[in-house]
Length: 227
Image (cartoon, rainbow, N blue to C red; front, side):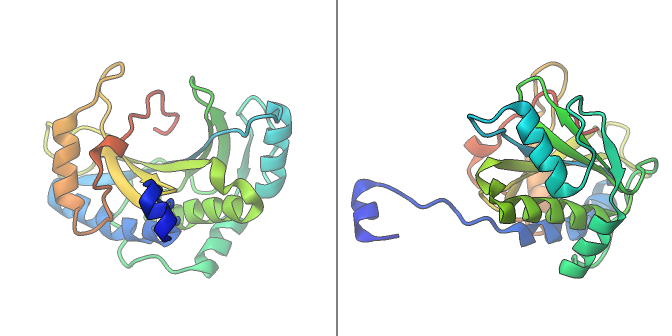
């Protein structure tokens, strides 16, 4: 940052650090061993459609880029074995998968729109490392093709697994694309969140993940299509 920026109070945005995603498998191990919590095997990449482009044009461009069906209804899906293997070749994830909830089908990539108009690319994979690799690949492809300014976050579902306490509840780990940091988000009911749980998760994972230090950036993500 230059002297003029300092004098005017301007700061440059933090450069995205997608490799921070590769810390997630290690964090998954900590969640499982410490609290019986596992990744659900479901994740989503959230982006904001650019102004001035029609929804159909944006949908088509994203579909072409990621080689998935061009389905404006959000119901399109395709196997993504190529994306998964490409991600694995592009970078190695941290050791240890930590396990994932059963039932997530590997290779599915679907599109959705939430109630606030944000677009989502949804991924299912019960293998934690494969899921992280594929989320990394989707973010990388979009960023490399000029969609970086539109990328907002990636979200991973976390659910109680075998050995979890009876009071355990599902929550999300949110990765902020432009910050390279994570934060927990625990919605309960309609537009309410469990702040106490979020702070406990921060304490639990602080040594495994780059947790966002600025609590004002722990944005609520209501109406998440990730389950």
